[in-house]
Image 1 (cartoon, rainbow, N blue to C red):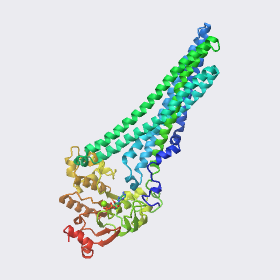
Image 2: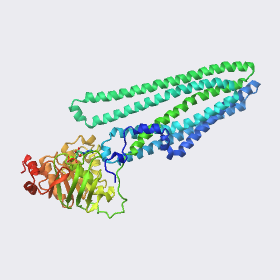
Image 3: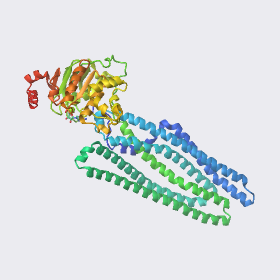
Image 4: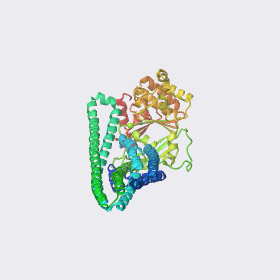
Length: 595
Ligand code: ADP
Ligand code: MG
């Protein structure tokens, strides 16, 4: 397996997305490939609608000819009306099919992307801004969606109408066509000049909005600290700047849009006048008929918007490809190896207390980072309680990350009941473990949501039992809606100790074979801590427990204490043994008046 945390193993590099999009301007189309039938049908209908529209000037010409001859032209009028209705209906149907398909494009892309994000490997994920990932799921997919609706069909029907109109106009009168071509070239040139500016400004606006999201998420994630630090002003300044950047970029885009729209309109009006003047003269000399001039003018009006549309479609495709590249960048980030399929290896039975062994584990958080574990070796017999102690940064939390397979050892093996965890399917491995993180995060939602997160199948009796064991029953009774009370974003309505007890209850409800507690009692008061120790003593008969604790008083009763230092187990034994044999332990204990 690739060394964990190695970006060379497929991690995203900032900036590759933009390069990628420039190198492959068609990238967006690869994302639309699964939706080809809908896009082809919608485009075909749009093209058919355009063809019906194209036929209209020819029928109008017949109508003018008939009127000229003094005949009523009823047939041509009916045909023209039918063409108008059929053209509009077909175009509308095409539009509907395209929008429908575009919704599927957005939906499948968002689903695949968010699923992928949840499966990303942790060390890499820790280094990625959540706001960045969120904007890729929300706004980049929206840009991609626009390619599906507007870009392909617009380019297709724009091209078709332009070519067909030019051919028909050449047949009607080559002289007038040459005048019109000047107009077309003028429109094409302004739009072509404006599109890159519009695309860049739109991208910058989008980035600014994304930056706002990241900033807000950062500020709201630590609002108390921000307020207490008196930093609202500075945080707001950043938000204002991002909003201002978005406004500037949006205005810039609008300016270019207005310029190209105005140029196009003026060019069309002018060419209308010129064609009318020159055409009128040609009608006077008898070179062309009035009906030809009418038909020609109608084509001028049909053609002009298509030229702009065509160029815009290309710009949209570029923006879509940039979005596709940003989406692909996330997809290229490594996901967790899920291990072998369920049935290849004999599996330890779920929820049975398991023994744990680390054998010569070396681990670093990246190819350049210094190793956290040099040669980690220890054994934890089943149904025992082992405490990990050691200075901060000694790699205690990393032991748990490796056990949960959030990351993989570079060398050495980690065994559960003698079985290498690398050989276990990831869901089985994690189902075995109850894990209480160092900062005991609470998810926004109700107390019940939080408890059932790790054990969705737990019944009411089990929930009651766990609440009692963690002394949360009084809290649940006190809350206005009991277990169904929302406990705020990140549990902000709970005290630190309550949050920790919710996290512990969540882990216990899983009825784990191995319980990992990372400084899980640091915020409990003496009474609650004593109660929890009773619970743990009770549970340790049926579960293997690994605890990390700064406060040595919480670990003195452990069956075994592992003292971690410099990526190794420096000493192992009971509290009494370590006191007798290890100087560092003695110093740590003395500092806490335990010697
Ligand atoms: P402890 O829990 O013993 O205090 P940790 O296992 O959390 O120590 O961390 C050990 C070392 O690894 C620390 O130096 C820390 O800075 C580093 N570290 C922890 N997590 C990461 C991470 N996700 N990416 C890079 N380095 C990390
Ligand atoms: Mg830690």
